[in-house]
Structure formats: C-alpha cells, structure tokens
Image (cartoon, rainbow over all chains, first blue to last red; front, top):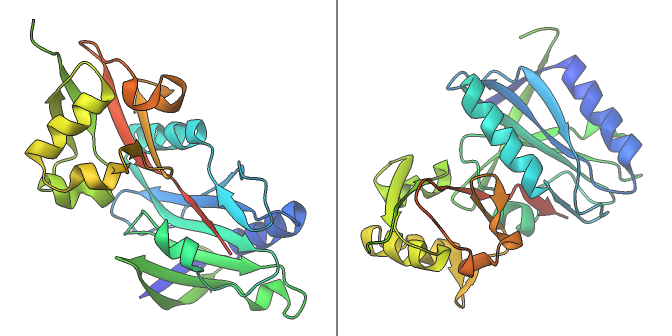
Length: 140
Length: 94
C-alpha cells in the first residue's frame, strides 16, 4: 500500500505542524468517494489544544461529514503531529482510529529529526498498524 | 401512543454490526431507548456506544444538528422526524 500525495500538501502539513507547535496539529485530505485520491487539504482545529492530544471539535466533525455526504467525498488522509515524539501511531492513535479506509499520516516536530525527514503514513485497521510507502508527486 | 421511528446514520466503522447498512432505524422517545432498540436488532452495537451505562467519550451522537451532550446525553428526547447521526471522534495523541 502506498500513500500518493502532492509535495504541496506535504509542505502545507509540515508548515501547519510548525505554526501550531507546541500543540499537536491535525486535519484531513478529502477525495472523491472510492478514489483514494488525496485532493483537498482541510486543516482542522485541534479542539484539545494540547501538546499530547488532538481531537476534532464535535460540531466541526458533523459539518465535515455533511460536506462529505453532499459532495460524495470521503476522508482519504487523517493527519496529525506529534510534538516531541516519533511520527509513529501511539496506543491512543490506534485506539481512536475510526476510518478504516484512511491513510493515517504522522509528522513530528521533535528536535532530533528534521520534520521533512519524518513524514510517515500508516494504515490502522482493527487495531493493527502497517506503515506504508509515501510517494510524493508534483501532481496527482 | 407508539414511539416514533427514528432514522439513524451509522458510520463506516460500525456498519459490520448493521449488516453493512448505512442508515437504520429504531423506535424510541429518548436516546437511551433508541440505543436499546438498535442493540436488540443489531447485537453488539450497544456495547460500541456505551460503557458502564454511559455514552462513550469518543463517540459523538447528534440529534439533527445538535451534539447530544448538550441535550442531556442518554436522556435526550426524540420526536417524530428527528434524525440521529453517529460519528466516532477523530482524535489521538502521543
């Protein structure tokens, strides 16, 4: 399995993680239902405003799903940042991964590694994490 | 007077419990009653929504456009024409 993503979106996610540091940043990338195309980047507010937790506000979440429904879209990527730890899904990330078809992207703002060198993607299905290749392209 | 039939939208991750159905229904005048009605039709669904008799923290349930947390949670009343949406929280941490 591979995540195909544009460099523009990668840059935007990395930038968002820097801007929102010291809190975790989060968001989604949407695409047409069933397409697996990460087309539309939608940063979301981290309602938890925490360096160790993220959560979409429940009202924002409903608005997002209504929009998906109206536009026959689905969530292709769910991304968030780890502020001081590895860009690998934590137990909490795994426990709350509720979109079985999504690619879960993690970035990290920890000092030890440059963020652009730690942009990683995973599938999280039934509690099992599998890392996948990230293919960065100029356009989809 | 019979309880109204309430339409419920089921998120992808819970559809294995509803035989793949995206929209199901149950007769109820409160959210608690609705969950019980759904659980009797779809075994195991109740356990994914409740823990120790309370709504699970990371499951969001809406009646029309309102988060039920602002409507009394399990005691939230339901009337004919109401539509319920279940969405697992999108959340995580390090």
